[in-house]
Image (cartoon, rainbow, N blue to C red; front, side, top):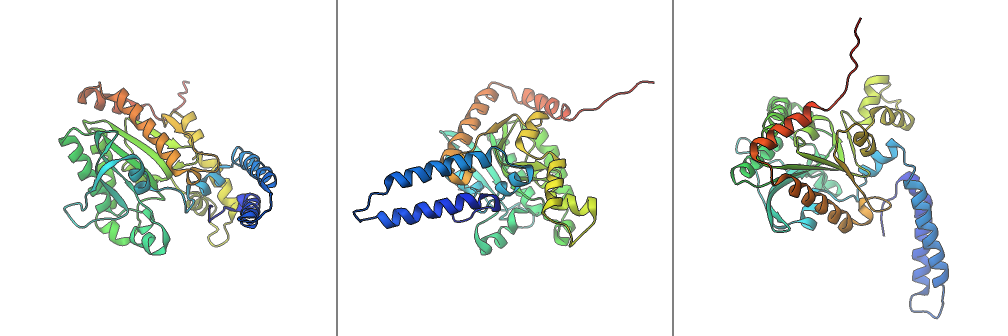
Length: 326
């Protein structure tokens, strides 16, 4: 049973608690209440379907941040075999907020990496809440260069509120590390497939997101800034900003997978189970694996030069403008 419910899921929580109570009541006793349990389970399914078919952008943001949502290491363990984690950027230190290494997915050797938020207070602090320092991005680039050297495809998972903005990170060249990654990824001579599995926040996400194929999970988000940050900048009411402001900002940012697909920024949306990826992690991982393998099938025939050329054209096509003549 899910241990954490979002505010808009409270009606579902009440019904699921009641179902659990009925199951405990009937366990080992001569009481047949199976028909009542089935009725309530159908009611839960219908209610969940109604709620999740009409989620607002802010509600999708909350689902993308759900504390029980699978993280990068969860997906690596569910989709890959023979995973060996590699550490350090060979310059400063190892950054646990980005994890990665070599692995096999359906016997295809790959380099796989992504943001890792961590579960529980202790691990979240250790992982810096999934906010990388410069050494995290330099570690990611080191792994991608290994992939290029050994001709292995690269898979990246995006799930971060953004790059860490602390003084130490700035002193060690946060902006430079992100910029170098953008440049180097744009000319990697191996296939790159990226999946946004939760939050995709600003340059912290872009730094491992320059890809040949970019997918988003159905309830993930990808934006230049968080709704909270956007609210604070636009309406300058620090300490007074509330949920209504966050909702207003989320609507304006067009941060949902559906928005980004309509803008042709991503290639496709990976469906999630009803209620979110945390409701069926294995099923979600299976769908992610299918999308990755399909992308590899499309990209494996392209020469390194063709990959770089098409990646460049893909990036140049993003965005639109109106030209007015007088």
